[in-house]
Length: 156
Image (cartoon, rainbow, N blue to C red; front, side, top):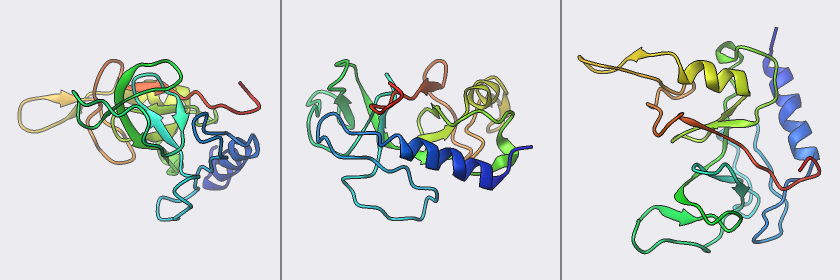
């Protein structure tokens, strides 16, 4: 059974790989808690269209699409959000590492977990069902509603 301690240990293992921002070349740190404030240069952000994880920078802002940026790794244009750990073990369906992210909120979870929740229709409003992030109840956007995280670290 997955516990909060096990999730925190998985985050520590991801951080031990010293993921780097390929633009600023600084080490990123995935915070264990949402309320934990870290140096802005160390905060990881994810490009939701491609899954590349990078630090905060001003490169690639698209004039035609406010809120969208061009990924410096693959040149895909799309939204960028802060990467947040989904730390509630009750929502996980396996013990896998958090290597996927929900779109558009940026919550990290395991592959099986994001695929499961992306396929579960939850009542939304009075006349519809939507797949939602289990951590924040935000309706998923795009298809399939999640992306695989691509870190620049010792694993890649």
